[in-house]
Amino acid sequence: MSITQTNGTETIVIVQSKNNVQSSVGWNPFVVMTIPVHEIMQRDAQEDPAKNPDALRAKLLAAQVDRKLVKQTVMTSVYGVTFVGAREQIKKRLKERGVIADDNELYICSCYAAKSLLSFVQTTLTALGEIFEAAHRIMSWLGDCAKVLRWTTPLGLPVVQPYRALGQYCVKTSLQILTLKVETDKVMAKRQKTAFPPNFVHSLDGSHMMMTAVACRRAGLNFAGVHDSYWTHACNVDQMNVILREKFVELYQKPILENVIPISICLYTNLLESFQQSFPTLNFPPLPERGDFNLRDVLDSTFFFN
Image (cartoon, rainbow, N blue to C red; front, side, top):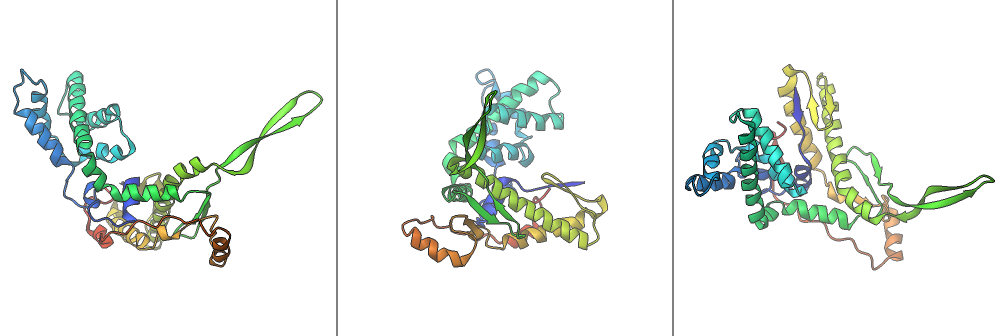
């Protein structure tokens, strides 16, 4: 049996401990994301089918709106999910339920549901932006600080982003001229900036998985990890559920963002003073303020890791 790992948005917001975000990403059982979509469909269902063909589809789908149907699209909306992507996500969920047998009608209903859901996301973009404000601010902060970055994971593993510009070096022979691409000292600033947030999040996910694996081994459980899933024997899933939650809390109680140090500042505090003397006008933006979410609530969350 597998336990699905938290997604990138959940990881980003937990380092800031925003209390109002957890409901939307799934750690609290209250399904806030289904309410507006359900209201849209209920409103459409009351209209005359002769004037609005979506009325019949709204009546059919209103009962199908739940957390599982809309969560994937809501979460991927922060990554810029398209209408086609949303339609396919919803179509897959509806097909799993078998409530619509006809493929053509399934397609039409999926289009309507995707339109309703994206309408909610787009028309409430300001509210959604407030909900995910923590994630956006941290992603922006990580990007603003990105030069050549080095950080140490909570497990003590040093990570360095190797993205540098490539130069050309010509080798002339009696037969031909070979042009070789070699790495230069020039930093690829754009790639450093865009690559750092996902790389950083993945390093945290990997740390959590390793901490869970070690704890499972000490508890006598067999453990396997497949990309974003945790696996153990079915008889031990409940015990692993407890372990992975405890390790999640242990991990994110640490000052995660405070430990992100650019390579130009270096990891060693005795070099910081000389750096500041050499570059007195260079300042890094302050860290986003932390929220008041109680991490230990994760221990009792129904939908965390499911």
